[in-house]
Image (cartoon, rainbow, N blue to C red; front, side, top):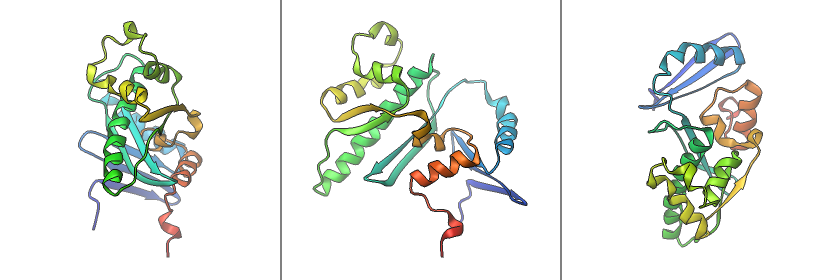
Length: 191
């Protein structure tokens, strides 16, 4: 089956991959210059100022689900954007936990990795309401799940944040590192 949303441009040893969704575009390249050119070409799309969020979900060391999407609302800070992403990730994990429970596998205190300490503080601290009054109430349900110990929010260094592969233009080295960490095989090495 041919994926009509994936575009690959190859010139000699240079490759750029572009995946187009209804409301998002994900891309990566073998050279930083190709990513920079693509970003420059897409800069005319800054009208709405919405962040692109991404999550990936692992069961053990196996990637079982991922998500990349332009956020539905404009955020005032990266902390707020990360907080909203954590809520989206929380919802996806709830669904995955239910699917696993249907197979008799109960999981509690799922680690939710975040590379933004301000977002982690928003999740864990109910007192910071003055900074979060403008955030729509449905984004706050993650706090309840953390308090119920369904999740454990943990800090992860940005360089180890696997979801970056779904949201940012990356250098070849960074792309290959994240791809390897996610356990995604290089199609050229398959036989």
